[in-house]
Amino acid sequence: MLSRTADHIYWMARYLERAENTARIVDINLKSLLLPQDEERQRRTLRALLRSVELEPAFTAKHGEPTPETVVAFLVADRDNPSSIVSCLRSARENARAVRGLLTTEWWETINHTWIECVEQLATDALASDPHEFLDWVKSRVHLSRGVSIGTAMRDDAYYFSRLGTFLERADNVARMLDVRFLDIEQATTDSPDEIDEFYYWTSILTSVSGMEIYHKVYRDVVTPDRVAELLLLNPAMPRSLRAAIDDFCMTLDKLKNGASAECEREAGRLRAELHYADIRKIRAQGLHAFLNESLERVYALGNMVSRTFMMSAS
Image (cartoon, rainbow, N blue to C red; front, side):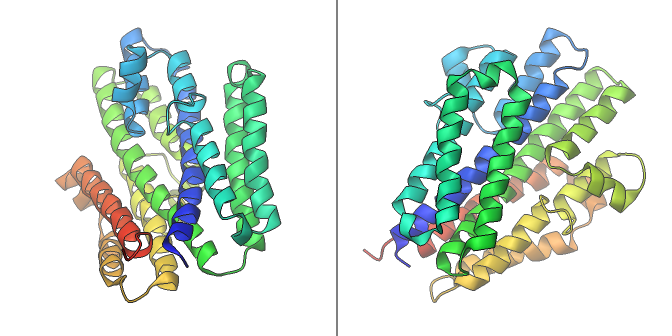
C-alpha cells in the first residue's frame, strides 16, 4: 500500500477514535460538575479536562478562565480547535474521502453522514439544548462506523491500518485521561475528604470508559482506587484498558509487518510484555504518575515509528 494511502486510513481511524474519546470525557466531566462544589473546585475540574486532551494552553490563550459553557464549546464545536469533536469528524471525513475507493460503501456513507449530521445538529444548537444527548450521539456514530468497518471491510491493509490507528489513539487516550484524573482526584479528596465525592470520582472514571459493569464482574466489591487502576491499565479483558489497546495494536501490527518494521514490532512487544507482567501494587508504590508518563512517552514513540515505517515515502 502507498504510504500516503496508509496515512489517510490510519488518521481517519485516529480522528474517529479521538472524537469518541473526547465525547466520553466531556460528558463525564459535565456530570461531575453537578456535584456540590465551590468555584475554585469547578475551575480545577475544567482545567483537568483541558489538560487531559492537552489543550489547556490553547484554551487559556483564547478564553482565559474556564467556564463550563466555554470549555464545552471549545472541545466540541470550535472549528479553530483541531482537536475538537467537530474538527475530528471533519478530518476523519476528509481522510476517508481521499481513499474512498478503498472503503466499502457502507463504511464511507457512515463516516460521511456522521459529518453532515454533526453540522446540522450544531446549527440547530443541539449542543446547548442537551449536551449529554449530543455527546451520546457522537459516541453512537463512532461505534456504528467501527461496527460497519468490522462487518463489511475486507481484511486487507486498509482495514488493518484503520485498526492500528484506533488502538494507538485509544492507548494514548486512556493513559492521558488516567494520569490527569488521578492527579485531580487526589487533589480534590485532599482538599475536601468526602467519601461520597471520592466514590463518585472513581465511578466517574469507570463510567467514562464504559467500565462499571466490567468492574463489578471482575471484583464484585466496592470501587477502590487500586482496582480502578488495575482494571484500566492491566486487565486484557477490559476493552478500553491500556493493556488491551496495546495487545490489539501488536496483533494488528503483526498483520502489517514488513522488512522495515522490526524496530516498531520490538518496542511494541516490549511494552506489551511489561504490561502483561506488571503488578498494580508495585506501580502504585513507585508512583502511578511516573508509570503513566512513561507509558505516554512510549505510545507517542510508537506513533512516530508507525509513521516512519509505513507512511514516509522512500524519497
